Length: 87
Image 1: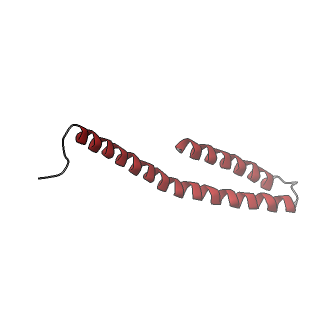
Image 2: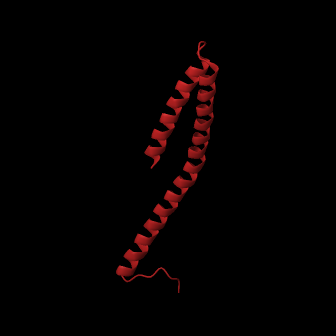
Image 3: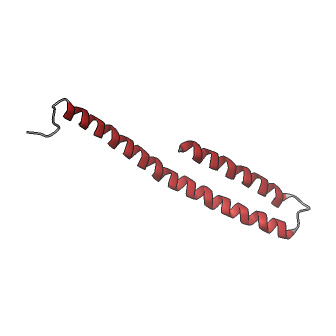
């Protein structure tokens, strides 16, 4: 999952680089500059979504992984006749 985020961010950064090149090129017409600017704005929105939602997804994956480990330990203890309950 983190690799997909990195790939998306790399692609969006490449789009930004290309669009900024188009916007800053002296002989670019106004219509093309406006289209490139709109893509730049959308790209920044996507980057913000990826970075803020990425933190949430990473935390969720960590939580599920921890619970999975805890569940495996609990199942192993039950198979071995041990109980996690306090007496």
